[in-house]
Amino acid sequence: MSVKDNLVHIQNNITKACKKVNRHPNEIQIVAVTKYVTVERAMEAIEAGIQHLGENRDEGFLKKYDEIGKRATWHFIGTLQSRKVKHIIDYVDYIHSLDRLSLAKEIQKRANRKMKCFVQVNTSKEESKHGLEISECINFIKKLEPFDRIEVVGLMTMAPFTEDEALIRRCFRTLKELQMEVQALRLPYAPCQELSMGMSNDYEIAVEEGATFIRIGSSLVGEKNEKVEVSNIESQK
Image (cartoon, rainbow, N blue to C red; front, side, top):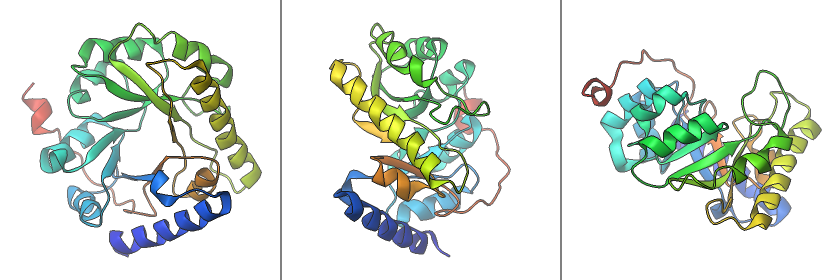
């Protein structure tokens, strides 16, 4: 199916989920996860009306940025190594994986503007997943106060890949509860108004539990692999 047809289907599902919990579909931003597809497929997403694109490797991101540039709002959604920050910091709009002070220090060092960041929390408690432990989240955010080039716009999590809806819902609900705790602190640098949670297999549950950004890959743009080349942007550095 075309990206446009897939998008219509996803939007209909979002609308249904919103009606269940008295939300408006305009509260939810769809981030098209384009890490496994070609530049052409990413452009198809933009032409279908998608404004937000998500990548998780610096090479793949920069390759697409070369072609698409500011026609999209860019999200770095994967684990970000500190040494890779310098490659992407001037081009990305959101970072979804802030989970350690060493990364915060590198963002602070490299950013030439205030960077919108999601603090990643491992609400599923799976060893295979990155992110802070639930109990660490609040203290970590408090430690970010000196970093004036970081704005904590929200929290991010990934639920387990399972058919256990109760478990998925619990992971998302935990993140919502943490968000409310952060907001209660009224930290100027951490308004924490957003929740990045939900993917192709569980985005409807995420919407019901308060997601404002959902990260959709396979059910929107597909999973066609591509050979990633080093971007001209990176090679010029």
